[in-house]
Image (cartoon, rainbow, N blue to C red; front, side, top):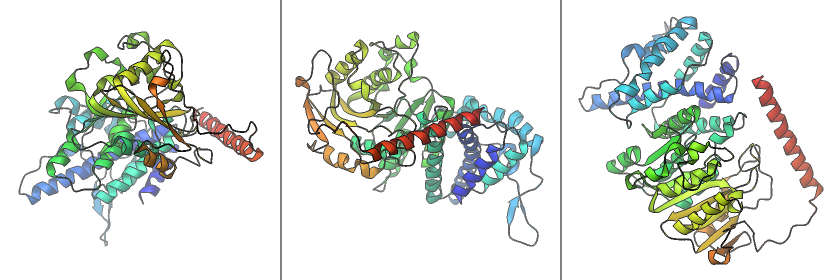
Length: 488
């Protein structure tokens, strides 16, 4: 039912002049979905208060509650069926209320909330960043009616909803307009979290949080397998997950994704992480665990570069400096980065590699095949390191698959099973080997992926492999062209 509802909503938004792409569909679905979630949360809280003989004071004033403006109900005559009142606001009346009253009211919560850890503060933040883009009040009425059919009351319902929301984020990543930067393949995130192995009580951080995939997966990892005490649950909810995000849309999606996974008031801040001067980071600001896939290929302005001891315009290199600095001693990290970081010979990259090897134990490098990130042809690696001791040996694993990865053939957890198994003991294999850091070039600290166990490949590939790659490239080109045409 949930899946069909999301499809119907996309069809409605596709017709609306204010929504031009999958990114708009996700953004607009998110704010309506959030208000329905909030209504269900308030009902649950009211029921809990009633059972304990307490009085519950709603967060939202009556005029702005979902059941008043969005979905006032009537019982159909002669039946037990309850449906949205046909006299509910619609058309221009609905748009006037949403744009002129509802959004301004919800924005004020940011100022009136007691602190940033509350759901009230998140309401204010979300509606300060968003605006309603749906131009037809009749389309908005249809979207509201569809979302009103959804329920967030049970764990199973929230679980299903969170998976569907992840699918929407994935689709957004395939839709062009840089949507892919918000989505890291879930099997890769799951594997990184397994290897880093966070514990309850750790403060877990992603400074390029995007759609919060790493934090959601870490929450699921810590929340499964054993019954949590009340204190442990409160620690998970309030003092475990932290993130920063520069872009408004990713910020909203990240908060919504965490809420759907079960974190009520996510500690995600809307800010440019790289605007923070590294010299200002103190012990109290540090984290036990860093999990991240920072944007690569971006260029930062000169004034932002001044915040870093090693100056470079490359966004990912600045993020890596930030992550090393913000980790506590003994802290652990799993960070995705372009594979050229291991071999580039420019002064900045060499200096950052040297810093990483001298201040952290870079114990594992996972080399990923091209196509791991749908729509992005860049080759990436995952760096696993612990802060506090210099690197002596680094274990490499090169993921070699017998197929080309792409949108129709994505990475899965089975692909990474051997890596997870061998990494526990840093075992050598056909795809894995260990490098002694004292044996590498001490002037460049080149860490290029060079598998000593791999035989030289034949110069010519089989015709079938070439044909398959040509077909995949044709399909990708067609998708890009369609995305461009949709925007015109």
